[in-house]
Image 1 (cartoon, one colour):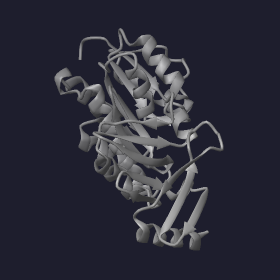
Image 2: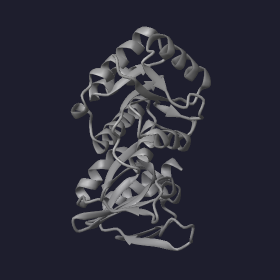
Image 3: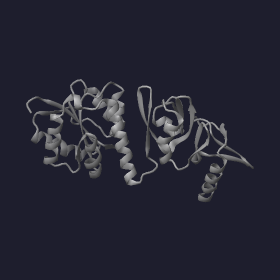
Image 4: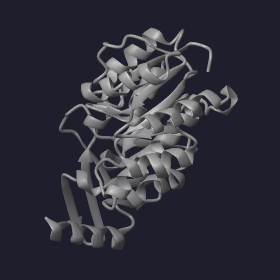
Length: 288
């Protein structure tokens, strides 16, 4: 390699950052590290560091897990300023994740602890990779969303499972367990989220409106949210957020928070899938 490669290291642990930096200095003098001492422990710091240097940036060594988020959160923030047109080498402490999923999805990665052989292989891969072989920003974010889901499923981490929704030009990775309800709206579906999740995603409202018919949207989250049930032809609700039940023979009315602003207003829906709902409510009460 003859040309100078301008690179950044995004890493939340100082000792790991120092180890990688020292190895790059010794093995790859053609790699010029930018802002070596700049902080990059949080997603916000990482996004700022990348955006401040993106005009001359060729390569980023990106730690998969930061103190308040992950690589996907970083790249989603960076993508708001334009397409991701630099090469990325992901650094992860999860050997299975690195070996099985990232490489299977065409991403370059190194698993910790980093040694010279691993580093040389990854840098050589990034050097050989042609720009046309690099996934576009949308494709990259979708790959990372899928990888995160596989990681969490393998580790049995139910609460953090994500569902990917596209809305206009944006891709959102919503936590499945924070979906309050889903309501069909023609060729679209209104996905109502908890207050916390709406804030985490940076939404002005408490809902997403992906271009998916209700059955397609439901397929994305039903397997991940066992407390989600269909109550009528156009609606699914999450029993985890249930606040009151009005129960009469052949008539069940379920009450949920109406929105994400903390108000006490209740959203009410009448159940038409009576037998299924009664059985699920019985199970829910037995578990309490």
